[in-house]
Amino acid sequence: PNFDLIIRNGTIATASESYKADIGIRDGRIVAIGEALTGADEVVDATGKLVLPGGIDSHVHISQPSGPGIVMADDFESATRAAAFGGNSTVMPYCLQQKGESLRTVLKDYHALAQGNCHIDHSFHLIISDPTESVLGQELPALFANGYTSFKVFMTYEGMALDDYEMLSVLEVAREAGALVQIHAENYDAIRFLTDRLERAGKTAPHFHGRSRPIPVEREATHRAISLAELIDVPIMIVHVSNREAMEEIRRAQMRGLKVMGETCPQYLVLTESDMDRPGTEGAKYVCSPPPRDHASQEACWEGLQRGVFSVFSSDHCPFRYEDEAGKLAPKGRSSFRWVPNGIPGIETRLPILFSEGVVKGRISLEQFVALTATNHAKIYGLSGKGSIAVGYDADIAIWDPELKRPIQQAGLHHGADYTPFEGIEITGWPVSLLVRGNFIVREGELVGAKGEGRYLPRAKPFQSRPL
Ligand code: URP
Ligand code: ZN
Ligand code: ZN
View 1 (cartoon, helix red, strand yellow):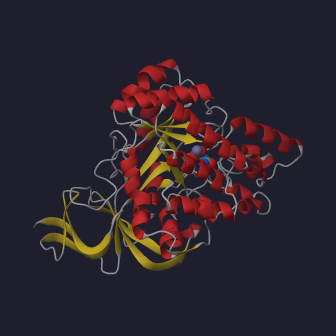
View 2 (cartoon, helix red, strand yellow):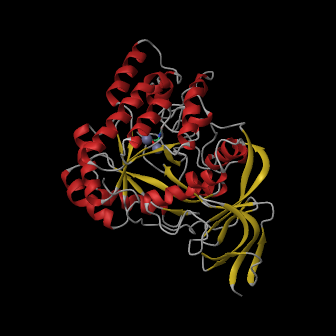
View 3 (cartoon, helix red, strand yellow):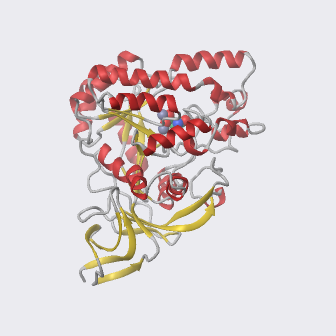
């Protein structure tokens, strides 16, 4: 036979067009796209279905240490299983450097956690929390050459926040190497100050998490991050943008010709600050940073997606169990929002939320959906052969039923968390099958791939990493 598999008569979509055709797959790659292909070991009928590039989620946290006694709800097995059910074929988790650690040790640890346990492909970003001379001078450049071509830095969080001098030092190394720096932009001292004042006033419920990091905290840090990158002349990605003011800082920078990219996430489209107002401690289920804002902010995030201010839409999956002393309700977490671990699960619901709220409701086109959820992630972070449906590309394919209507329900999800912050949202359009390199991982809603099928992907130099 010509092919191992033919996917017949589906509607294929890429970042630039959609059309009906058959896809011929051999040895894990797409080798033909055309009408009435024949000669395969197996033919799958996709009539009435959408055939999309598998999602690439370039912002997820898996098995990341999160403070004393706190444990993330997903390991690599459960996170990549949930990701596969959510239509994703690649994830890019973070490897967190803790103070004093060498980056090599950090990477060894995360590779050991991932090795043999992933259902889908994965690549790694590094989080730099301790930019020592040897990290900046030796480790980062050497790791870049080995396929670790992006780093995240934090402007807030105890033990992680870099000051401006350190930020500039990391940006300088990134410029030299051609790496892409992702920035978590919130003003650390402002958050510390506001948190202290709120606690003094006895305002410790989860709701006050939002009050401790209001929009100016994010806007100021976004502006500062852009200014620092401009001083060094290096492209950056501002991650998890939650509101208009931060979005407009990025837009202004783009209009001035700077290479500043932006990312937003489902929580900023469909949650609001009032979700953290739920009775008792339930608001903790929605605590993430930046916090969900208001309806006007949701509109601004849509606008950012529509106009290309944001080039990627990621989950920022960062799961903690709710009914769990090692999760949202850690003993300290009950005493103040300050100690509630930040982050929410979302690896499986990212694509259905954007499809249903975006494509089905007419806010974005199907092609924009593909660009924002797959193609741009591959390009921006240097993943070659991924993120599109084209001859020569890996056969990473999600087959969607665009008419399947079902609300998001915890009972139907596959992650390790015991809740979803998106419970009850009505969704039209769900992925039903998922292939990675030509192999079915999920087929008609059933897991059929064995764990360990996912491969590690070293990355090339990111597109857009060249200085001006
Ligand atoms: O609250 C969040 N987003 N937690 C995950 C870590 C991060 O800042 O991305
Ligand atoms: Zn962050
Ligand atoms: Zn994150």
